[in-house]
Image 1 (tube, helix red, strand yellow):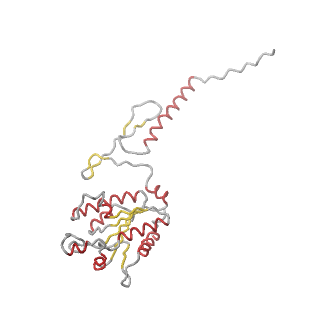
Image 2: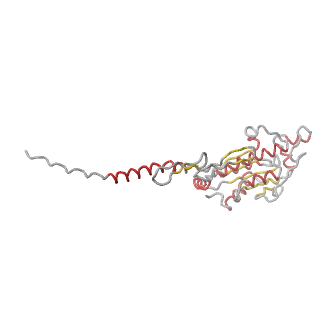
Image 3: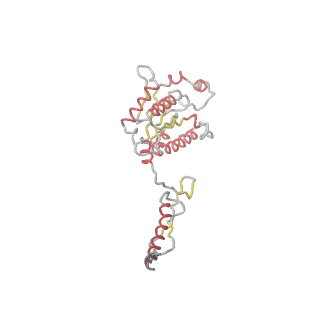
Length: 270
């Protein structure tokens, strides 16, 4: 019987080549934590390795901040930002701030506008003043200082929605100009669109959907906007909703006015 051929021995790697491959593999392994650490910067610092030789890890000391009564806090940045979210949604995140007297149609406009935008494929969220007082602001009264805190909280929440790429529609009386201006300052790059419901007091009082004007007139409610507490109208608001020929515009007409502004100023595209 013929003898089977004997396979040639495999070449053996030299010790120096094995050492080089080992160092390269170790280098690849060490880069994984660094790559993961770049995903969300902040926190307790990031360890860094330099070269192939093992060295002591270098820690980047986080920058602490004090904001108001909050001390020793750190701002964490993540790689997905507002532009990425806006591209995903096909729109620009912004805040549409609807302000005006009680009964002027703020909530009506907010819902009509949200519906129209939804039908067009845009993501919105309505922050209604009364709704927010059922939860987030349930601990606040209608005194001047509490009203200011009410608007500050809503402004901060609205800012987060805008940063998420959502068209946030805030509907509040927000009677004081300085509080609305403070909310505007939270949103750079013209992301704050102020809509003033410029309807006469007598029209709003005639509507009186919640019966509050009647209670205010009889003294059963104190500090009611337009009766015994002032309303400061916007000076340079982006949009003003007014009566035409003695008639109040329909919800659809009001929504269309705001929609035209959003389209003309590029808010409905990323």
